[in-house]
Length: 264
Image (cartoon, rainbow, N blue to C red):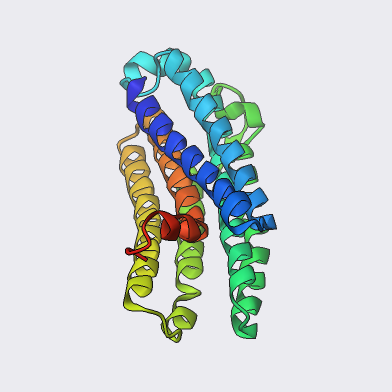
């Protein structure tokens, strides 16, 4: 149980702390909150819900155990995986929306803004496929957690791969979008270094997405479908919360400048 619960609680707590700092910065220092701040708060709420789902499973002492031990709990675990996957999909896509909305507040370039709107429009179908594709993987839906029922299921590996590919692709596009505009800015060296660090952490999120896909793929190839789903929601919790943290870093710059004036 703790194998899943420990990283989930750790990163969810960090994300909650960072979002709280963001709100403090917006209201007490900048005194100007935007829609992106409310959107990232919605993302955090969904992440907290995902943490609760994983915590409930850990309480049952089933997550992280060998397949032989949890076969009798397949129905409950599968339902958990579906719910956690849906929450992950909503969380990461709403986080991406928050980042793009923040770009729209910062950048005035028409080309950059058009791309922002295009990427925002791509998030809805991406989220719908991730949520509905996983939930409706089998017909009837109950066959997901009761394989004895008559019906058919799509290839779960194809689903996981397609969702991850879209997620990773959108991550790279969103992270790379402002780089040309920032490169043209005449900023002090310290400011450029701090901005580069933010983007490096953003690419770290992409790395987590790749690790999530690779782990699930290896487990699925070995026939460990339940375990692969379990590892998927563990990595999902880490990815979702690191994404929330990354989305807040640019907004925290006024606070960091106040606390460490010689650093920025």
